[in-house]
Amino acid sequence: MFIDRETEIRLLEERLERGRAEFIVVYGRRRVGKTALLLEFIKKHGGLYLLARETSETENLKRFSEKLADYFNDEFLRKNPLQSWDAFFEYLYQKSLKDRFIIVIDEFPYIMKGNKALPSILQEYWDLKLLQGKIFLIICGSSVSMMEKLLGYKSPLYGRRTAQIKLKPLSFFSAKEFFPRYPLEEFVKVYGILGGTPAYLLEFNDEKSVEENLLDYFRPDSFLYGDALFILREELEEPRNYFAIMEAIARGKTTLNEIVNETSLERSTVGKYLSVLIDLDLVRREIPITASWKTRKGRYYITDPYFAFWFRYVYPNSDLIETGQKKELVELVMEDFNSYLGWVFEEIAKQFLIELNKRKELPFGFMKIGRWWHKNEEIDLVGLNEREKTALFVEVKWKELSEREAKGILEDLERKSELGGLEGWEKLYGVVAKNVKAKEKLRAENWLVWDLKDFKRLIGKKCL
Image 1 (cartoon, rainbow, N blue to C red):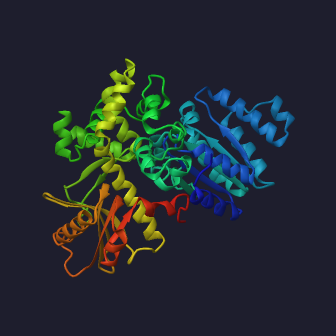
Image 2 (tube, helix red, strand yellow; image 1 turned 60 degrees about the vertical axis):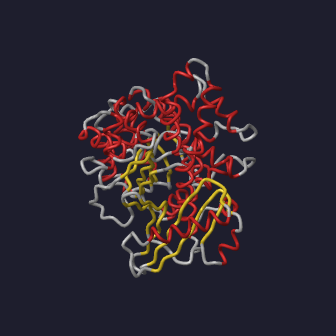
Image 3 (cartoon, rainbow, N blue to C red; image 1 turned 90 degrees about the vertical axis):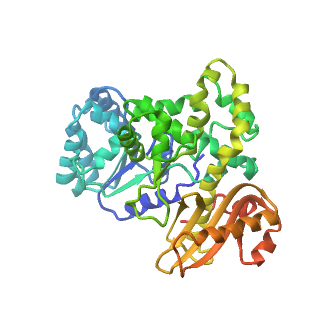
């Protein structure tokens, strides 16, 4: 299945239409769909896909030579494989002088490991020769840390790329296309378990219940069970301390003090590890939306629901999985699941409001959106337009609301909004819930009210 990614395909096609030499870097966490994106692009426009392996330089050059020989019908190359990366890039240069030539080198970090000088070799050929041709070169990698070093100021390739794409998991509304049979309420649960990573979404079957799918997940040989460990160990040194921090966050310990107390690690150590997790896009730091970026009021959240679920339920209970007690673990998860889904539904509601904002379907547009809190008061989502001095305040509830409950939430939201220091701003108030009774009646009173029924029309209709 190839779903969504219209924005990324469009970016690549715009570059292709320019008709000049291009050097594009595509990267993102493993399983997120980079290879599927690049193969879809080649399927539409032609080109050659080369996949590096974690093997010797000689073996990778031999395999690449075979692929090039097949693509260009070059019998001489087939019998005389390229012996160096200089020879490889020289061959690409000669071919790119004649015709437009798309070439993708996937898992580029694997060949960098075998030859530390490779970025310098590519820099020299890009600067001196490849720019003279019509090559459309894409390098791709799954090691986020290595790819970002490749793009960094100290890298020989700094400033050479003509474009870059950091591929992220699919949104809730795109991911739903993987499961046409699930009602939206059930898919909220699935998204809370798997997030938007295509490889994980393919592991669930919408002909089974969520509980039945979890029984398959909670097996010692399960891909979903083992992949978090594989990815994190590939990216992180000293994973034990990182795991302790992510487990604390998954349990709701979101401030620096709470994480320090939960893990018993030194404050400076926690701060250092959090910075690494943020750089890898595994954790994000949020501040109250009206606060200065210098504030110390930051809270930390796991970025991807797959890892949030894994650290909340799977990692701490791996003994149950290893000893075959998967039914007991499913029961444990279901007892706590609605509490966990409150956070997930806030993230989904945020995506929903961002899409409405892009489509200009709100009474006014916001420039930024996030949480707000002060002392014991908190508002789930606040959208601000500082230029027009307009603000949208929204509470998110993973439950069914009666008219009376919804009205009480909205009236309390009005009270809390006065604490945010936005005197003189135009303010609107809304609620997002699983289901809201008397929705139209509340809307007639100038409240903004949405529930899962309003989400349906955004499925598979990403705003570009």
